[in-house]
Length: 400
Image (cartoon, rainbow, N blue to C red; front, side, top):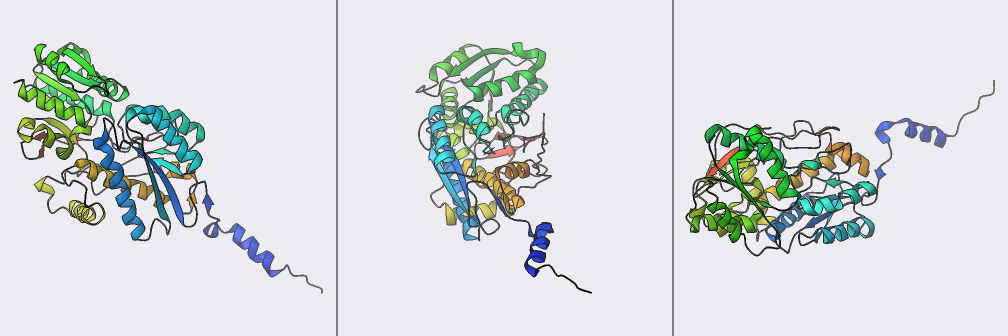
């Protein structure tokens, strides 16, 4: 009997094609066997430049990851540009990152106005706009914007929680509100009013400011004159410090609620004056590395060692540096899960597949969860009060 044999090369090729274990690597622009190109947009200049340190701490963490061998053997090539907190500039930088630098994704672009300006472009290009540095509620809209995802607790949830706390503790409060006149400020204000429900008439005065304003002194005078005994301060760091200082210096002593994005001791409370910040109420979802309660916490010890080696010029009292370190770890987890399938589609799929992911930087009991229909990684916070030296947590972990 005559037998025929297929060439060995054909048999091997067929076996390789049939084996999922030996599946071919998949790459989109920005990814290769050796590197993963990550884009970032931050306000290193302009009215929100206090946040610029976030971009620097992220870059420092990626350097540490590269020194440790990278992610699945690939080094991170981090490209970060300054938009000066200007939406038109953010659009210019996003186009440069996507079309010229050909990054795999844009990570942690900062600010609600800037992210709003680039959202449609990023989704039209089908490039991940991942873990944006803003808590606006609209980043959790996978149906209409499947390429955009938030990270921190959203502003409406935070505003809602402050309102609930006021209703429970001072139901007859007269509330004054200062807010930034853009999507960021209005999002916080909407959540706050939702939390007050039928009691929105408790707000006796609300005034806004523009990011181009030199001060908020006139707004603070209006709020004090309104007779408000409770103050919701919806501002970015520069203006937050001004508002805290002005309230104190003018003798106005309302119950003072400060939005989480400006609760950093280093960039806000120290410039405002620690003595002038006593009694402020805000929220946390991450540990406070300046809190002595965490002095021997493994995550805080790791962060201190990291800062000493990779970002020695960074301020240890600035919560933004701890934030940058934490959010960068979340992206590294997503990239690890992506394995050798470094397509933009798979990166978004993995970002939407975080199940009870415990970030060491997060407060106990707070976990990251995402799904194809839920693009809000963090959805819980805890109230805190400043005692003149540090933030002190009180109450239980809360969500909307």
